Length: 406
Image (tube, rainbow, N blue to C red):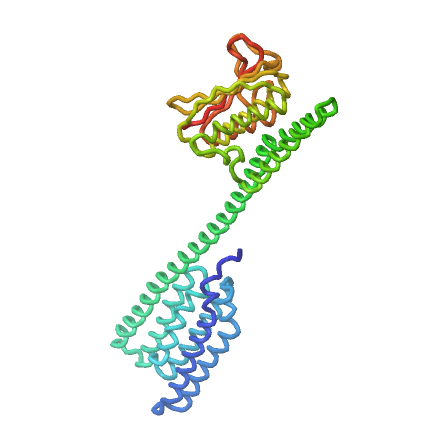
């Protein structure tokens, strides 16, 4: 993003037009003074011309950069001298019009306030001396010259301090706005990156819980088909492949799992778990006992997906990692929510556990992998929890518990 354009830079053309314009108008007015001697009028026009040339050579650079105190002193002192010459030749009143532009220039051409204050005090003082000198140094002319110089300087100082204060505040706000815009862009980039990462993690978890498990089943069924019952095995392979295709389409479209979408809203999770148990028994040979209520309290779609994916992971792990021959799938409802348990009769947690069921949180226990870690993260996203523990009844195998709020 480009830096904010400086106030004086934006208005530089206006400064040029104002100064050259006031000098030209004053020169025309000087030439129109028929009551003044021609030599005085030519002197006045010469002084105005010198002021214009000095502005062209020095002043424009100060407006563009405004950093050199020596050039600033040269320009303001030279321009002030031109106005003094003009006032000496034709009277201080003729020099008033250029002062209306010179005083703002004094503030615009420097970043420091002290030199500007010196200019807006010194030039009116010099014109006041000219006024007193033209009156023959009469004492009566001193108060008027003093009051005029004081009023001019005071007005220039007050307005200069006020305007430069406003400009500085405006530039600070512009700088802060630029920083804010840059920060927002950085945050948007970071948020986009985080969203991409979250979507990748979601896709990885979905693929692990669905497609990967399905392909493993297809491989196992294909191997079993070599030993006989080829037709039955091929039918199971086809059914598993179709289920995988439906899951893949749902993942790509970020839709609910097909098993959940195929049931009535009031019983879709129960129906999905029933179909999962039937497939597991047919494909893996693992007997699955069900303990499911007829109806469940209303659950968020995300919570239903968490429970279904947990059941898929739990049954897959029971057979492939625990060599289980039987598993029990149950849903329990209480005031806090719904708890899914997957109990198997396999080898249990690797390395065993203490009597009474040593607990290992999913994703941190000894018999864990990517699937259990993803399950724990998914449950946490909906305010739930997941844990893998040794069976408390003393039997072989372990228990997966996943809880979600209702």
